[in-house]
Amino acid sequence: MTTSLPSRVEYLVVGAGQAGLAMSWHLQRAGREHVLLERRSTLGGGWQDRWDRFRLVTPNWTASFPDAPYDGDDPDGYMPRDELVARVAGYADTIAAPVVLEAGVERMGPSGDGWLVDTAQGRVSADNVIVATGGFGVPRIPPVANELPTHVHQLHAHHYRGEADLPPGAVLVVGSGQTGVQLAEELMAAGRKVYFCVGSAGRVPRRYRGRDIFHWLAHVVEDGPSFGTVLPTAPQLPDPRMRFAGNPQLSGHGGGHEPDLRAMARDGAVPLGRLKGVDGSRCYLGDGLMHDLDAADRFFNERFRELIDAYIEAAGVDAPPPEPRPHADYEPVPHDMVDLEAAGISTVLWTCGYRPDYSWIDAPVTDELGLPVQDRGVTEIPGLFFIGSLWQYDLASATLVGLRRDAGMLAERMGLGPH
Image (cartoon, rainbow, N blue to C red):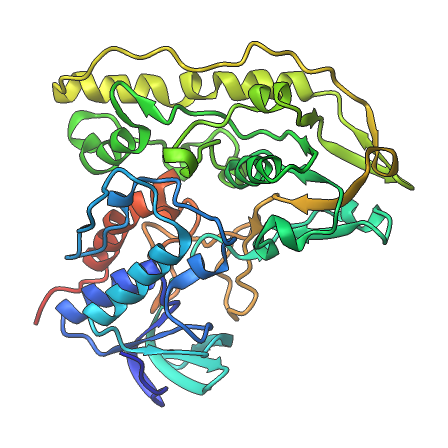
């Protein structure tokens, strides 16, 4: 239910997407007074910001919320954007979440024994604040974008809605993570010539040992600790910057599939190394294309296969042996430069992810990389909590797969027992 902004509240939840709504469910069950602030004018969360033909990469059954499992007729499908938006909005209605719309937070900081929060609807005082703004902060565009010719159309994937909105001509997609490969495939299907700069994101199989890859990852997240098979947590990463790595290359289009950069190149796209610099219409590229393609092909075996196999064995799951993975036997020719004008490239589409932005919180809440300093969502600052943030606990934390686990853990650590 939508509501108006109170002057004071016990719990204030910033964000009314799936993370904020999950916490609303826990707060309601505990009988705690609270409101959720949503910067948008409609419910549905950040999914409303995705492109027109967006589909979930995780199966439909992952679109489950506390006390509201997926109840549709296609659990193994991949729902389109508008259906997902409607499901999130519907859940808000189902639990009668007290949401204040068009109430983006402009500034907040500690005050006395609570928090003062300035919003687009006015000021509210809160005893506790739960930040549920998700893992996507501000669209990240690298500085090299400023060197591109002014006549070249540039936009970030966050602002892309469809191929028809772009000017005629070829498109350079910068980034080869989950969003990059999906948009490259969409543009190719529309008849565009596509060039794409390959980054560090890896490939994972759409299905492994008879089930969608997320079937196994969800079981590792939920049941893995009982069998000693768990995803690495943020402190266990060899390099903290790995938290910003692009999501593995997967797609929910065409019934769900595993994009293959080599196959895309075989079918007419032009893979390129990383964009290093620009001089006029000439874009200069790094020499690591083949290294990155090979690393993408090794990614699953190096990061997930052993973990999933160990879980299957430890849990005694009857699963078929691994299937052969599709792999295009194609070796593209590396380039050290691409001339935008000669190639007819009219658009550069940045799919470089997001950078965190918590500058609106007047308190020392972030580390050197800009991510919240917290332990399972609990900070050292009294009355400040996080849910759904990037690598809050592990890789699954900012996904539908890990959300219910993290929300339940945070509720427990906050002492949200019924009274």
